[in-house]
Each structure stands twice: as structure tokens, then as C-alpha cells.
Length: 338
Image (cartoon, rainbow, N blue to C red):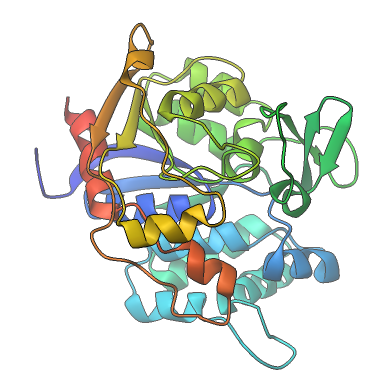
């Protein structure tokens, strides 16, 4: 496999948050034409506060993708800097910067364009929609609204909720034409790991995205999660995650599924198991007869990565087990060259 950057390979990464960050951080060393399609349903933390108080579109996941593709180390540090005191406590500087740019230009798309210049981004970050949206999850007769609320739910026996997105002002969500164009023109499309229902769900269920994925000529790859989420994906094996990805998108479209084969240390496993998060199981017998090819690889980061912001205990703990960005990138590029 080539180790230098591949000129002309159009790669689209779909997701949001940490999963997209890790995939993009690795791929940018191997390809020159990368587009990140980003979830726009985030309504928690700093992002949620800015949405509520200023009426802006959610900057959090966009910021992470911009930082991942940035070629400026100091600018990356600046955009990820999080205030821990005063009236800005809890806010990431990049979120405030994107919010200010949106207010200044009157356009979130223009705000991203300017941020890409400041961060010297190698690639493009594209919101899946430019509408202000809220996601919903329906389980039986119960309907939960908002990413933050849904993330806290335990679905129990029902599981597999119906995920939908709607404009906060009411009406049908309009997909960003740039997102569809990127999918149509891609050579390789990667579904990043991440929260299945709250991060990937809002992207895959945005009207037009599923259809575009099914019709795209590109090879389509899903990078499976490392651990399950209690109350939502507990007991899921690799094939279950892949099945849900396609259900959310409205039909089969995957060509490859990449999954991790090495296990975290017992110390890490014990920390995660205490909260009900366990390694995703692998049932190789379930891959037989599938329309996609399943490829196992050693994708676990060799060292424990920890968020330096210890004042954010949730983020601090959840970053203990991570994919290795370079290992993911190499597995993805092997598919591109195959």
C-alpha cells in the first residue's frame, strides 16, 4: 500500500464528534481531498447553550472536524481550549468563534469557510443540513425529543428506535445540497464510529442522505464502535451495528465493515464495565452471506489517551478507550487500493 498522500482520491467521512475526529485525524495524512459531513442535532453542553441563547446552529461537532483537518497545531489547541471559570465556563473557544462568525456573516456556511482559512484546513467540513433541527426517537408509544434527552434513555427490550429529524420551527428538514454533491462525487465514503442513535442517526435520517448513499458509486465503509452503550446497544455485535446503520439510512448500502480485533487491558475494561459499557462482540458466523465484506484489524490505540481537561469528568473518562487514527486510516486506504 502507498504511504504518501493519494492525490485526487475523494473521500467523504460521515458522522460527528469524537468518531469523526479520530477518522479524519488519520486520513488527512493519506489523502488530499477529504470532506466531513457533520451531524447537526447536537443540543447539549456549550453547543446547546449557544443554540438556546443566541439562536445559532450547533458548532460543536463542526469544530471537532475542523480541528481534526487543521494543519496548524497552535490553532487546533486554541479552538479546543475550554474555559473553566467565569461566564464562559464550559465553552470551547472554537464554539464561540464559530458562533461569532455566524452572527457576523449571517451564514453558518460562511462561518465554516472563514474558520477553514484560519485553521488552514486540508479538506472541507460540510453540515448535513443548514436548518435548525431537533432529533426524535420513537419506541412504541414513547417519543423522546432532543439529542441530550435521547442519549440518557434506556431503550430496554424495544431498542432499535425510529430516529427522525425535524426543523425546530416545524416542517421538513432540507438536506444541504453540498452534502449530497459530496456523496455523489466521492470515490470512498466512510461512516465513522460514534453514538449510533444520537450522532450517526441524525445524519443518516436527514432526508436525501440515505438515497444518495444507496445510489452512490463510491465504495462505502463503516468503521464499527469499540464499545457498546448501556440501555441502547448493549449486547450488540459488529453485525448488529452494521444492520442498524443501514436501517437508519433506509436500506442496504455498505460494501465493507471494519472492526477491531484486539482487546483493551483489564484495567480499562473494568472501568468501562462499571458503567455497563463492554467491548463490541464479534460473531464471524453472522458475516456469512452478507452483502458487505467484514474486515477485522487491530484498531485500538496502543496508549491510553486522556482529555487534558479533567474538569470535564464525562469527556475525561470516555476518551480512555479509542481507535488508533493511523490504524483506521491504513485499513480504509487498503480498501481504496483494493
